[in-house]
Image (cartoon, rainbow, N blue to C red; front, side, top):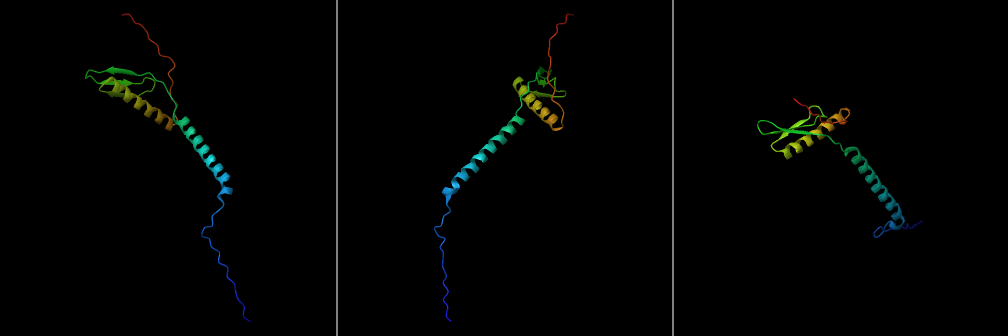
Amino acid sequence: MNSKKTIKIVSIVGARPNFIKLAPLLVIILFCGIIYIVILLRLILEKKMRTYKFRIIIEQDEDGVYISSCPALKGCYSQGDTIQEAKKNIKDAIRLHIEEREAIGEPIPIEVLLDEVKISV
């Protein structure tokens, strides 16, 4: 018995998946990814970007250096050769002070009242 076997060769060259059927699914996946990224960024920014308002004091010492402090944040001091530099440096010190307090779970003080008094001597 002589039997012939037929081998069928299938060429995959030029075979393409049907992207037209996949297009709606790809659009949905892309859209969901974009929405996820936007929501994630929004949550990160809301958590990180709180605004605080503190009063600062800038005084010039006898050497001409400007010393800046924030009375509401105990121990928060800085300095600079100019008023602008002292103000910039105290802003950095306040930011670091707040970040550290948040990291260890301490509350951030809020200034409630700041008033002036007149004294006659």
